[in-house]
Length: 294
Image 1 (spheres, rainbow, N blue to C red):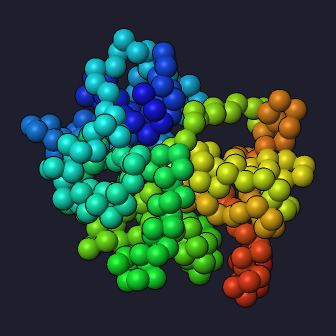
Image 2 (cartoon, helix red, strand yellow; image 1 turned 30 degrees about the vertical axis):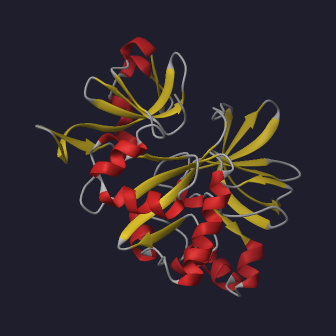
Image 3 (cartoon, rainbow, N blue to C red; image 1 turned 90 degrees about the vertical axis):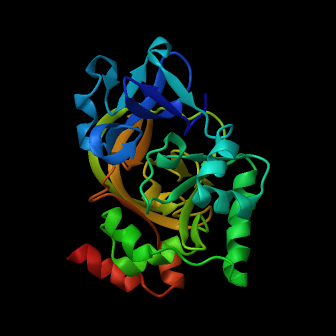
């Protein structure tokens, strides 16, 4: 069982963070909603709701499900060929990449996709960077189109100015549209690290990134005096080594080191990461500073 697989427990669907016993996971779908599978309906669960379900296994935003309670495991990689046979959208994305280690997650893995659902596509290990390069070249050749940035901006309730959001998104090469199908690529490498620290409070920090794993989960940025960990897909790939960044999030003390957590909630609200180096290059640093003063 790997990160981004799914498990089913009592008609509820959880996204796996870390396999084992218990399985560390996040509740994504529960019964009764506008998504249909067979004779049942389901709905997507908001982050603010997850604590109401399976309370005996819940702790600080995550569920720890005993392995004996797992009724079905949805393997994101092994399920891909079968899903491609019944889901034309997934097949289009898979046929574009044609890489050795691929998978699909989210609603299309568990059969709860709506007609306009994006394809959450997984590329494992070294295949992820190969996939980003395929997207970059596909954009250049016209085989791919830019995603609907305005829709993503509204959906994710990004608090940064739109122009600043798009400037970061365009250089990530982790999402695109192929033949009308919107997709993201998500990285899966080693085990996910579950970080728990002593919460201090909200902080705003600046510094130069000296080490980065920008597409990991959590995305990791090391600065001289603190680390930044990002748990929201909104700010994955937001900055790279050598760039100066500014981040706003929750300061925690983890094993004696200062760690700024960005994405402590699904809706990021007042949290963000920006590359000041990029904003200077794009000549929109003034817009950022003006936004901060508002």
